[in-house]
Length: 341
Image (cartoon, rainbow, N blue to C red; front, side, top):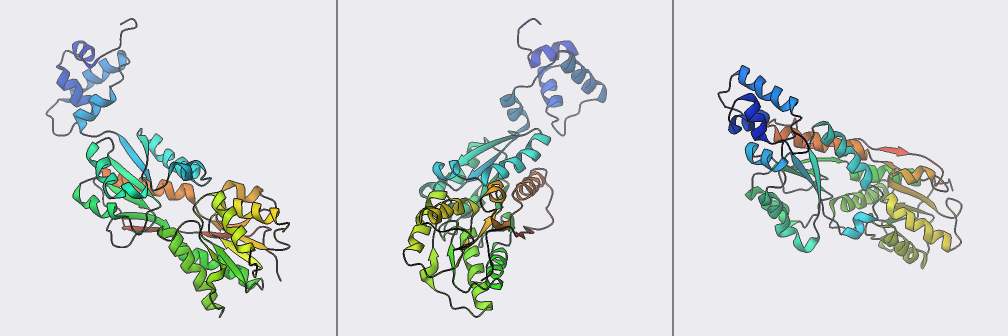
């Protein structure tokens, strides 16, 4: 065939069948009355010609794009500075490559959420979607019921019947703060991972409060600051906390935010854990190599992503997942950023 691109017509001519038959066989279209002998002829012809099907033609024939979407309710800036995200992408790619699918990325900001998901679904560029870090006030998610597209949340959101895969953020945060309290800290500050309209941020704050209540420590909102996913916000909020410093330990509900928080402490001439004990959340790769290594909550990011992708694959194949809400375990990883009083 020289340098000419092999087409499905070439395969049809070699196999002695119609181009439509080639399309049905190579796309494994169900319900077609094609004999086993004809199928083998087509497959043998395609192999001998090293035929690579055109993706758009395959999509038309099978009504499947063989692509799924990872939809992130973040700004491009947040995505670019998120040290947690590569683990999520790695976990998704484990499944996507195994299934020979494509993974598309979409960023949806708050002002467009009411219509963004519907537009994605109706564009037919993806067969299903995984939504990362849902917001409590996300009106667009409720509209997904208007279209038939398999969707899995990485996170949890009440008021929707979408399938979800998550960790128990509230319990994990409670365990983190209880560890500080066991070390003798009663003035524990908190810097959230995100604004409170993100479900993970809200739940981690509730876990912080649960730990205080169970220890008989009064909640003090002067010790609370709200970050915004990135190290810059952690730096800013730690600077704010230090302006009225009355705490000996801090729970930072994101290791990514903790990067900035630690920088603010260093700038103020304070050391971890000698002056301020610090505990994080997520266990990003940076955490174990920081100085000192950061005590944190290990969130199984890659496994979380893999599980969400497998649930989505089940939905795409018409299978019913065992439960609508899967919760994976977290673990407190004790390193050297906390000291006993």
